[in-house]
Image 1 (cartoon, rainbow, N blue to C red):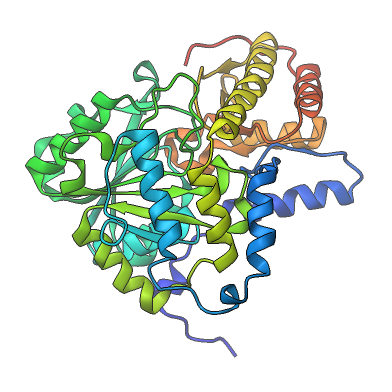
Image 2 (cartoon, helix red, strand yellow):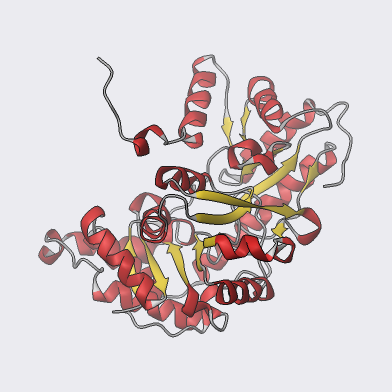
Length: 394
């Protein structure tokens, strides 16, 4: 018997990361020693002081109870303190902050309270796949903003016709970017805020890679004048503090929008685990040297992969932030074909750029979340397949 599912259930696209997990598992069953560079799953470990706080918090009887719906006051105050000392932004912990279980949890709530069927949501192409999935599930229309390599893989906001902006209900940004690693300077955010104010749409900044830019050009949207009038920012602790499996983050910004996200989440979400909030508060309020060390570690790894692939003849985007390397496939070859060849013949798993939209069809994304030795080995393996590859200009 075939069960009758809802329109929303029928609209859910495949999860590209789960599908890639199965490909990697199948290759390993075939005896291939796969170096998996396909996923953004941090290989780090929270620093000792964060782990110590979590261990102590587990033994606190109060943490066996449900936590407050909005998040523990100590966690929200720590998030407000982080905004103040890292970005010079003053937020009210009770009205302009809300605890969520990571960035996707916050994004799904924001999409749900902002978009009705037929509404237009704009985001850059290539994009993080969840944006497309959430838009499809809600019946929203997508306005894809093609990026331009000469603009550092940012979209040209001024190239979008005024009438197109008039139709937009929500603009989603994500910098440092997944998949490209692009960073957005303050003037880019300022222009987006100007457009949102003029055309009456809302902005959401997916700040999942906060702290992981290299040259400091990766600040908070909320630091831009006027941003809090039109938008939200969603921050995850997963990448900054290597806490991906712990699931914690927060939504920040416009009080009315935060309130709407809260009301939705009260019914459809779940509170962040109590002791994880205590550990998160310790991470946010303590010295941020660990985050800077991680950013430097990823920069060193990025240099290994980018320089090695460039030497092998590939065109690599000179990204400055995030956890990925964005590589162009050779002429007359798709990113999907290149990723398949790397996996089958070199034992290196990478995601085809087509997983991130039409603009990524000639690209692949490699994660930097393996030790340097394995990254060097991956580049060497790919290099053995690179005969005939010529440098191109992205």
